[in-house]
Image (cartoon, rainbow, N blue to C red; front, side):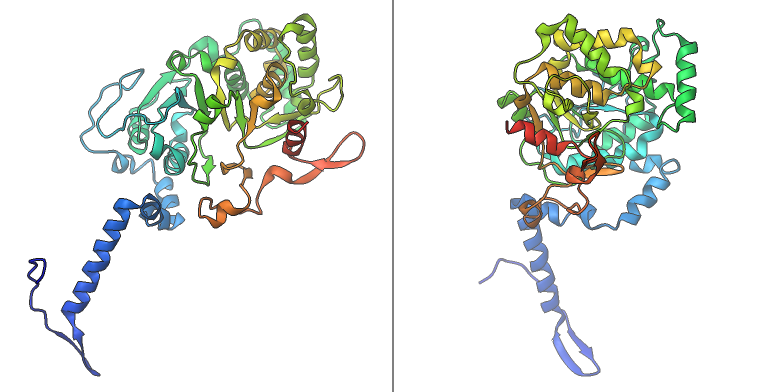
Length: 425
């Protein structure tokens, strides 16, 4: 009695040592293993992902592919794509899945055309670690139109809806009220002093845009929550819990993975300008805020330079759109510090969220493994034993020592310990 399968009569395998088992036995074993693999893949997602070829393919293959991206761009693109425009709401729907995540959220990616290989790497890791389950949409922004090549490649590696937008001129370029002679002199001084990005105007444009404009873009108006993703960043762990829903259900405003100290020479007047704003607008300061993260002084006299590293953010755009933060940004922008100094969006966001929300509305996303060169947050403990993370636990920026404070005490490069301390008070 059988399953009605008729196998061919295969001969015996001969060797110098004599007869071995019939070849058909080897064939039956091979078929059984193949059937078992297909069956387990269909019912166990973890097994399917663990045996995914992309996970066991040597890294040099991906490196080789990236290095040849300019000459092999069409090999990645799917055949038959013939759309003429992908701006705004015009995107191909075939093969892309509807959102299953429950939050009104999106990924926000500020990227340039030449960064295509780097963003492809980050998108593939985001899809693998998180978005293959939830299919949240992507919004790509650039200060110039995206090329067809960029649209073709990126659309082929994401599982969900995506949109491409150009940043309005006034949101990106240096505003007219800036004294360019003064700004240039200060840039040149920073270059002489070896300040990173000290001479770059485009970097300052980016910092100002991320501080006060990205959430105003027309493509983002329909969304509330966002996850910021940058080209070349890496994600190391399976993210099974939806962080957008976590923020929503727990009334959180801002989430981070890495915190650190800012270069003092880039924000010399930022705290004084902030104090001036607070003096004129005390009504915006939240009770039980995170001042203790930002200042070593009980009265907030000085800024200790701590900030959340904003290349990773999962946050509520309604906070950036609030009256308190908008007034704060407009005040900063009027003073010109984005161009006369080099105010970054990381300290601006951190000060804004640290003063205008409660400290319990800020969240440290410990389970999300993340790297932006040269630093990474690698979750610790059982998450590795369970096969949920694949970063090196020894390479973890959270508690690295090395900074000496004004009192001569060795503290840490990271400010995460300080955040955890104030969160418990």
